[in-house]
Image (cartoon, one colour):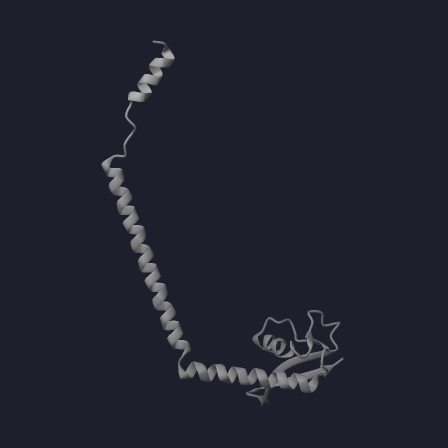
Length: 141
């Protein structure tokens, strides 16, 4: 028998290494733990979704949404009254909620621009009585 045949014979007779009983139990415990954590996380997410949906369906949430929509529609109407269709408008930096409201209201009628020098009109929301506590200030350039 040559050395190569001896090595092959030994490899054929050597049993494959087996996983110890402790390792197998550890894998099962890990699998159960991962499944348990996943089930708890899924259940918590479902409960959070249900409670959020309930909160959004309340009369108070509906009334608040209707009031915000009414205010935005009022601002959009003020934009249509004060600015020609398609005009370039400056609504400020857009970092405040009021600037964002003006940009939203003006978008379908006018063209908000990021460059105030190009704008022909400057639009600002200020406290007033026109739109639920706000008034649109329109200044032509």
